[in-house]
Amino acid sequence: MIKVVFFAALREQLNCSELSLNSNDFSTVDEIKQHLASKNEQWQQVFANNSLLSAVNHEMVSNEQTVKPGDEVAFFPPVTGG
Amino acid sequence: MTDSTYPEISIQTDDFSLSDEVALLEYENAVDGAVVTFTGRVRNQNAGKQVTSLTLEHYPGMTEKSLLKIIAQAKEREIGRVKVIHRVGELFIGDQIVFVGVTSKHRQDAFAANEFIMDYLKVQAPFWKKETSKDGANWLDAKSSDENKAASW
Image (cartoon, rainbow over all chains, first blue to last red; front, side, top):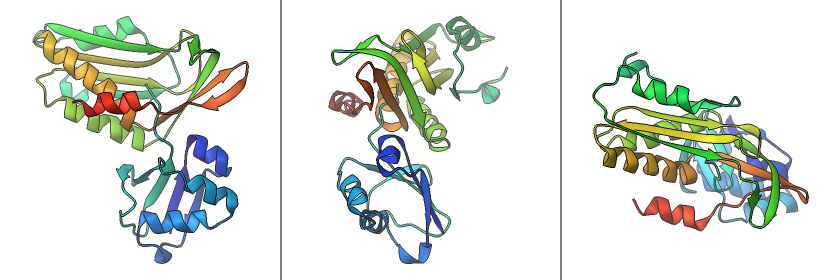
């Protein structure tokens, strides 16, 4: 399994804070994004945003990052703390 | 208190005391002559809107990792102690949001490390602000000026 988590505006737009995916179906962050975008029109619109950031196991990564079973993948908007 | 037990980061809902934090940075620390602190607070307006509150969300686990990484980079300068506090949850006008404290032998390293930590925190640490005004609540957009400032180091 791969745990996928969403934060801030993204979590609200998707009305979802986390979900699980079968890890055998995905080898990269980009494949996960494409899968999530294919859920419905709302998800497609949200994932069409190029400014979204991705993290795997709490490290910022690019779309090409590979994923493996047990990973935690996160998607969120650019950060605005401080 | 030894440096290995000094807690360098704290993500908390509670407020913090600037004087307590300075006292901790200085406690049994005779080697550092400089103490530089930064405190960020909730303003009453943003982009022409009267703000009533801010709600801070973060990504538990990644936030801590990200702040420790930023602190490790800051320590490439010759600095002594570092403390970063960031509050989460709902905060109101005038409330303290963030604290960065750095000690060093001389002021230049403490000033530079403090600014470096804030600049990187702004673009790398997974915190998000939701602003509430009389028009409703909305998530703030990241500023390109913050990206440029962090990239300038």
